[in-house]
Amino acid sequence: MNDQFTLEYAPSVIELLGIGLYKQLPQAIEELITNSWDADATEVKVFMDYENREIQVTDNGIGMSHEELNSDFLTVANNRRITKGTGFSPKGRLVTGKKGVGKLSLFGVANIIQVTSKKNGKMNSFEMNYNKIKKTPSNEKYHPKSLITNKNVNSSNHGTKILLKEISLKNMTSLSILWESLARRFNKYSKNDFLVILEDSNKNKKILDEKAFIYSIKPKRHDFKYKFPDDFREEMEKNEDLQKLNDLGINGIVYTSEKPLKAKDTGFAILVRGKLAGEPVDYQFSDRANDYFYGYATGFFNMDFIDKDNEKNYISTDRQSILWDSDENLINVRNMMDKLINRIMRRWRSDRNKAISTKKNEEINGVIKSDNQINSVFNSSELSDSDNEMLTFVKKIMLDPKTQLSKNNEKKLLSNFVQRTDQYQKEYGVYSKLIPAGFSVPDDIGVKLQKIVAEATSIPCNQTEGDKFIISEGLLFRALIDATTSTLIEKNIEDMEDIKAIEDEIKKDSKKKNNKRASFGTTRWICNLPLRSRLKATIQFLNKKEELAAKKTEEVYISRLKDIIDNLDMLMHDINYCPDFGQLQAWWVLLDPILTKAFKYIKGKNEA
Image (cartoon, rainbow, N blue to C red):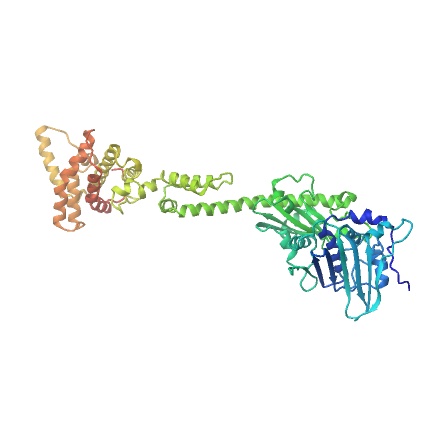
């Protein structure tokens, strides 16, 4: 047997295909890792010796014999799928290697490559030197330096070790960056079936397992995930293009980020047999990829069908891109993928707008809850239709994604609108300070009374100390007494003994003056009575119904009656007169029980 190792290719090709093939260390190491995958390895160790500038990659795969090292490893452009008649490893893995030139990329990062492999109880090793390869005449074959030839070893001990010496790169990639890059370039890592361990001379250690690939692809702050075909089953039933993509076995995930991604993290990668075949780029499926969606999106798609033909190659030699335009079927697939991405884009816009609205709604609700006044008005069960309409309007403005306000300005805007509501005036305006708590007019008491109270509660806060407020609130108070007493008397005229006595006095007076008078008990007759008389009759009626605490209570009310009514009457006739806030407040406190009890005996809706 010839113990010599032979590089079966013109040495000049090394410079053409090797040096320029991969320009970065992770790509070269990826080639070695995927070779280990094809060799059925379950564990690969990558050791980075930064001090001596060496890299060692060791696996526990099936290894290579002396003959296989020559026929498989040292034969450049050897399509193993054709020569071995299968695209599967001995244990049934889909192999990633095909063109047989990836190993040349190692000379792009190192000048010396040592290969040691053990199989069937034999160990063989050789060394290739790039400088010597270059000096080999073009009409001669290069013979690597033999280091070990068929040395007996334990038959259970098998695998391959590749040592890269005299690293030609200016800087050796750090372990963390190497891990990230390798994680993104291969998707077959597994703790049980294919564990890759990275170590360095500083005793740092990182592992590549089943979590690595997704971790490296998925944005750290992702918001949405769109999985094909799982998330498109319903659409697939109606869409022929989606069904065709599914029939081809295409699957993948698109992730979107909450915020724009860095340019290096965007785009969609293409994996073929678990190995990166097309770098993640925005324009993977369309040259028109200029929508802002692409600044938020990243992901990958598995497209094993691209490498189904063992003879045809649709992947660029440097595995940077898919040769879409090289085949009519691939052109159609690319167009269908473009349509799929457009569907995902539309979903994302809708989902994002909903999420933004939900988030903004939560933020706005947080601002509302942070202020007791704003919160009580927004969540009041007694909001009028106009208040509801106003608050809904302002919230709609704030929920618009185009509205950009700080929390402080959001609070100011909400406060401004809240203070314009009727409900705010009831709870925090002058009405709440002037009128006793708990005072309200029943819904079925009558339109006129409702309007009077509604008007009284709408007086703005900034008029609490002005004459305008005192006059208007005083007049409204008098109107409320007027309407309440008139309605009570009209509804309960038969029980109004004091009113009957007044009728007798009016009759006598009318005969003396020959005056015409309204019929007893009519609305006009009652409204013509002095307010003092109506209020007195109301007090006596309530006392008779035992609504007042005691006889002396009636006397207290009646004794103070003249002063209150005279002052309220003066508001109607003397523009220069107005009671102060304290006086009005005292009158409200005194007459609140009378008005509240009177409502009890006014039944039905009326216009008194």
